[in-house]
Length: 221
Length: 221
DNA sequence: AATATTTGTTAGATTAATCTAACTTATATA
DNA sequence: TATATAAGTTAGATTAATCTAACAAATATT
Image 1: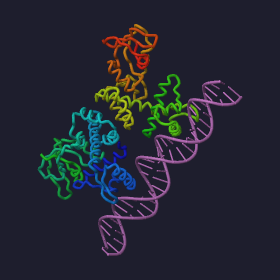
Image 2: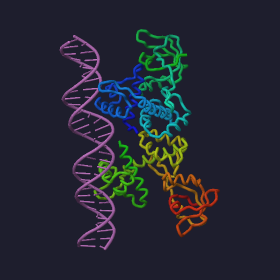
Image 3: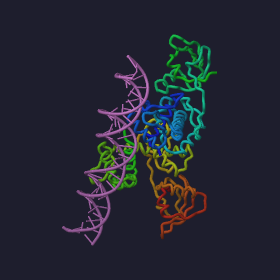
Image 4: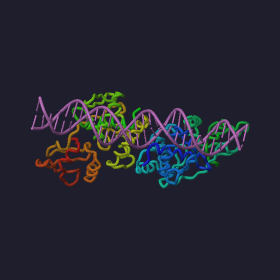
């Protein structure tokens, strides 16, 4: 049985491995920063996780989840994303409110609870941020993720998921009426600063920054 | 902010105060036994809770929740019973499975979560065991609780709630098809051992022990 | 009232998760 | 390559929650 804290470290390592695209390794400091603890603390936990064969790692080396560690982390991620979906769909939470509560709910220990929750929600493939929800068997709905910033003038797409899940960005999206599935059309790309002039759904076209365009994953049509 | 453990102590004190009918005081050993810890541990926690003005208590004296302590404990009980209701109504848990999971869920910190959950469930007054669910303002649906064992031959009643919530008893009730609301008719009371011969719903009459009759609260008709 | 039993407290130790400060190893740069 | 900087570890301390063993107070029994 994993402690609350151990689970958080595993989940952090999994998330960081997604972020570090090609190579899924992570450093001690990176992990500590992500979790908001000191590197010394991370080192201690690493020893414990290594002891339990959840990470493979040697002194001064990079950190990698073992198969077992990855499996455990996937279960936690699955729970997190299912709970986020529940909060949005069933309890009318807005997508910038769900994370904090799901961080707590993901640690509830009950196989049956997770599976029944998934059933109640109708076996959703994606969470409210558009991120894929791991299945009970560990499988992950695969998706090609294209950043809005990679598109050209004239391209059309739908919003697939958010790269940046900060409350600030999510609230901005809310204001722009941008949701998962919203249709976007690129009217113009400004080379000078990477900003874009886009039509959002049926609304009036407007300009968005490069930072914005690099924070949104889309599905090209 | 209360720790997970502190919350458990407060809830235990509240529950014990219900049990001790007339006087809501509790002893150190009683509390320790209820929580499955040693008396020494309970003493330590008591000091902490006293420091926080959640219990009033002096060395070698009895323990009593302060107004603040009672309020906090009621919130936890409210969460516990709402989650139990959720598990039964929405996720098809049986009533002997809900307790363990609700013990974890009751510690999730989010005012909005609780209130929205209550709304989703349609503002239920009672949980799956027939126990009253405290309202957001701290009010508790008042009920007169009569034990089945207090009834006489010829009396009719409906099952209001269970006094004993052990999985063993709940599973036995399941087997007998006794649920909250089930109609019972007392055919005969055996003075010798306090057992009763009763009709359960539309079924064939059968005999139940005194222990059984003392574990079930009913509403006399 | 004297003593035995029950009840509750204290002192000292343990474990998990964290910290700071000092140290070591690895990497980058001049 | 030598050295400066970044990254990572170790040692020792702290806090919360728990324990055991020894002690103290309150209550019950003769």
